[in-house]
Image (cartoon, rainbow, N blue to C red; front, top):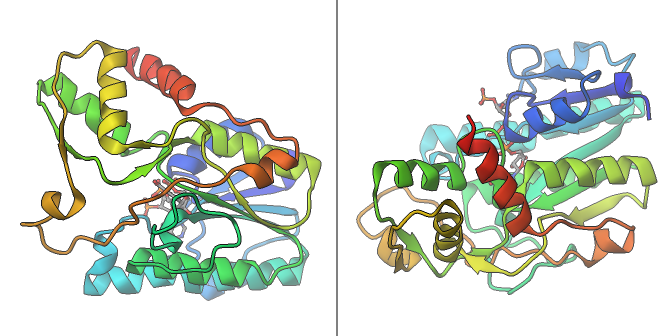
Length: 284
Ligand SMILES: NC(=O)c1ccc[n+]([C@@H]2O[C@H](COP(=O)([O-])OP(=O)(O)OC[C@H]3O[C@@H](n4cnc5c(N)ncnc54)[C@H](OP(=O)(O)O)[C@@H]3O)[C@@H](O)[C@H]2O)c1
């Protein structure tokens, strides 16, 4: 695989930054260089040196997507723009790597397989489902379906580390369960798929390990940092009861990992990657 022929889209996001670190010689663009919602920009982009597209761009603010303007923006970026990119991939014979989410499901199944039918609860989940459908029409594609992404950006672990610095004992939902996915894990899986070239399709990718609630993960974080802060459990309906415009969230986010394991990929446990992540955050 020639790194120069890789185009990273959404390069300034959590995953985009991790992909740039993995592929320093790849071309990396964010909305200023290539706004994927502009069909002319996508059509007129010089694709002649591109063989592989890594699409890390998305509208990821799940609550904002429930507003009138957010609904439109989420659909533009997560669905319509993906259609423009799919068209470019067909015209220029590109391999297309795309990222999906557990939010395409209603979360009633304890662990999601790649074959589970779409059942999104939220606008974000609906718009991402539409994007997945568009990508799945391509001959050469990998959709990595993931959950609870942690990297360089605003994320749950950073929020908990901030609360710790302020000495705040947080109240956290204990009825949403899943596994964290560090961007390092996603990047390893993308590199594995591009290198080993298994059949095109959807591949679930999260870190492996015990399925835990956000409240339990917070306890794990505080235990790791030595914070003497109590974590109070709550339920999703209780937590959001006085808040407006909150997107419905799947309660079960865990993804079955058998399919990617069968291709020879060995997952890292989320507790190991969390330890490393906390160590790095503490030296910043
Ligand atoms: N975060 C999670 O917990 C999670 C969970 C499951 C799946 N995912 C999926 O994983 C992927 C990566 O997520 P992430 O957490 O890295 O997202 P992120 O940090 O929000 O990054 C998304 C990037 O896309 C860019 N972007 C937005 N609109 C664009 C446009 N019109 N043209 C070009 N770029 C645009 C954003 O730029 P601006 O910041 O300027 O808007 C941002 O740099 C996404 O597909 C997401 O749906 C995320």
